[in-house]
Image 1 (tube, one colour):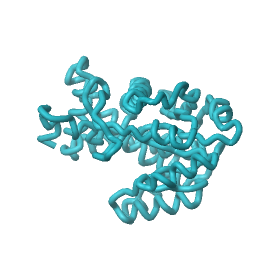
Image 2 (spheres, one colour):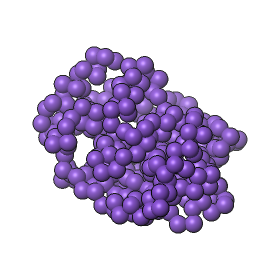
Image 3 (cartoon, helix red, strand yellow):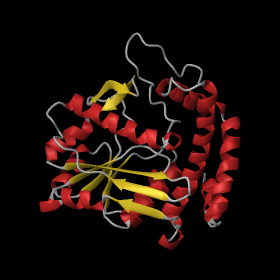
Image 4 (cartoon, one colour):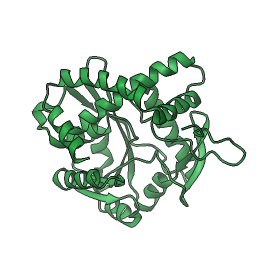
Length: 288
């Protein structure tokens, strides 16, 4: 892993247009050489886009693998590059975050697992200081580098198991980056539709908002066809929390679905989003 980090760090010194070209080649290789995760991606796309043909889903899967590799290069930029080397980008909607923070109110900065996430997190940090809720990767080297980057660049880092720490930061008026779309079997997780399929869904977002009085401001970023990036802060969710945690969590799912449809290849399809489907439903990842 140290060697892999070093390799990517060297590649990150190349001009961005060359990195984009490399992502196309490496993504194509990864798609054909890593069959296990390829099967996961194809299953996810089959469930979420049943109206597409198998050929269309495979094209989308190949585009996703390129997006994954490009996301790796973007992470290198976010971790190690200076701001002058960032690709062109446009941030819209900053006024929504400013309005949500009025009076010292805390803000849950709601987003999802897109391959662009590391870069658009870094770019927002140029404008707003925030805390991040994080889960350490299983690999110790990656975990060490992640913690080092958090300490260097962010206002604070809160482990996802530290529920009191999250609420405490929000009550103190902090902006807290939160990514709820990879739920585990926990007390506050339930099965809700995601693209019409039952998926384990966290109800923590409305609960954090209710316990802290924080506003919930969605933030997403995506690559444009011309190679630039559009970063969008949406207005704070109104009537949230509503008092119905299940309805609020379903609303978050719908919001994420809308963002996925804007650039479907950029979502993190290698995750087994439908691993838990409820009694009586078959295991969809049985072959991968």
